[in-house]
Image (cartoon, rainbow, N blue to C red; front, top):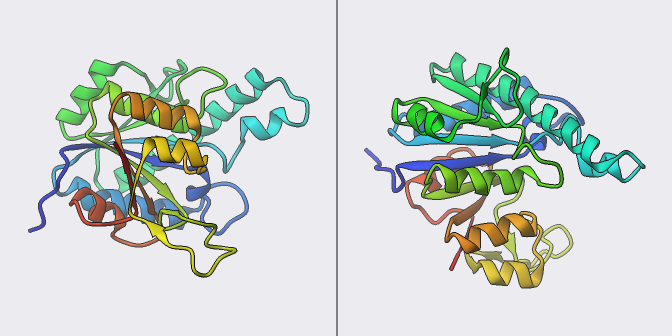
Length: 238
């Protein structure tokens, strides 16, 4: 049996990941697929926390660009992450995985309030915890929320699921010879302004020595490979 390298992880999923090949909304097939991928590490005894974005429903930054107030737009984006979190909770529980949603914005009828100690207790009891509504503050992305929550619950690594295999030395869409970068420092990511996560999230991870791994969600088995310490995707560390 393959043994996990990490005991507690945070998985960051973009909202776009949940819409699959659709142009908008939530794909039931993609929900099932990602739930099965999470199941593969849950069965190894790994404590899993998840942060989901909301870009498949509403993106605050985009709305603010056409003259909507940024704070209002960001709050709408946070509500979109709650919708995604509830959908993903349902998908996980259909796989037999007990799951709790904790929201940074109070909405007691649909989710627990975010309480750090309660979140840690859920993880210790073998439940998956989904953190919704970002940090609860405008002007902060769900990437930053993922790094923040990972620090708060003392996760050993943050897994950033994307549509590509990791970070490349040039745009793989434009350059056939683009090479995958296996290891890179936080500072190099900041200097080169590689758009894997926003700069606030990278800086926060660097300040707190949180290792990040960027990998392709669409490659089946990748989440398990990262958790078991295999050379998958791009590792961002000191």
